[in-house]
Length: 628
Image 1: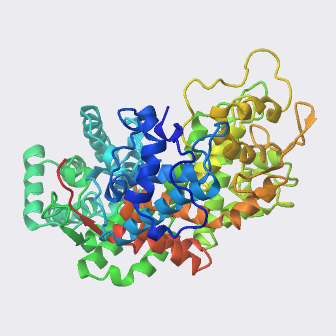
Image 2: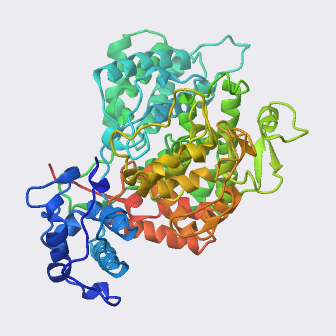
């Protein structure tokens, strides 16, 4: 059982709180530590470490700050009244619970606010599969995805571009060698004179080249290609070495196209191509903080928004030292470019878990209309809404409230929308607000269901994880699944009632289940329904924070208004994690706060999320890291 699921034994004890206490005046040694000693150490101290949690290691407020991740979880569970769980004979009253929760919040926030500015450090990391494909496309104009046969990328913090998990295996290196040879052969093709030149030839030089012009054309190609591939200026010595490599590998008198292929292969297996480098003079010194040079900034920008290399404009601005001066206009240009579809596919696709649609398998007997084509339609609808909000600079809350969507004939039939024909997607107004926003999309409703029925637990957890940014703790071990044997009887709400009566389960299910039940009007592939197993659907409920609702529409309205701060912060933290390629730490709270503040001052419009990230301390700077 995870430590945050363990009972934190805070029962009424030596401190009696009769009125609100200023948390700034609370002493850890005099007020907080006695609580832990008297009421928690029996389970979480003096040699006891239930759930892997020992609280007697926290002897000073500084210790609490060092263990800030644990204390953030403790604070949440205490504030929610989940520690200790209901059913215990003695439980702290509200004032006692508030004392620990308020002190924890105040102490941690003070720590975050007063800690020295720290941009963090991202591990030197290789290109992931998506980045590799995009880079090859933009450099060499091949029309296939060479990384499709590479080993799957590991993920961290919900994304597959996290530096700490992008390892390099011998198998992957072999794949890089094979791919380089295949790509070079596909890119460098001599076409008959009457044929139009390839995109590669239009970009670099047209083959064949006159003999007396070959040396100049080859040298110019090498310099231009290496600059683009390595994302920086290339030294003369590097060009000279590459020319020597091509000569040694291809020999004298071989056709120009063979020498070009050798250069492509050599560049594409170089660490300068495969890895994203931000070289430091003192990589092992955590106090060595520096601003990125403009080439590094151009690379971070391009991989964030395009999942690919900087184009010539970004590189030229970096060479002039003018990129930061034109940062806002460049971000606008990049978002308008078709390559920004990568931000939709790779960020939104992972944040909203759209990639998981590939492994969802609704029961074919129960849902025969669900086909691979419909699955892709579902995914595309959500992507197109994200694109519309992003490029239209719309408020981010419109992702939850949009009373319009993008459908084709197949998806329209699933939704019961008339007069939509053909494969092409079009923007349509939705009748009422039953299906407003991404939480009404069949993509999300399908990936949060079981193969044969809806799953209020999965749907509730999805919202807590990805919309509100308040994930529940993992379930305890040996929790029984819903009965699988025999005929399914009763509504989903009736079947799940047993979980709410189990004290171990109840504390989390009271958060997740009301949210999940709100979407019971949608079946396991997102079709609207009014009955479940022959009984009327009851989609009403109340959030654990007290807000009542009658259906999904009212719940989404709560998320977009009363809970909008949670949603905006969640999106900000998710996108900053993706942009940096690392998990967020306590020192990132201030940059996150600044981005959120900027958003509030600009009606939460999407451009200010992207621009706030690009202009933030951790995106613009970096530091070394002490050796373990």
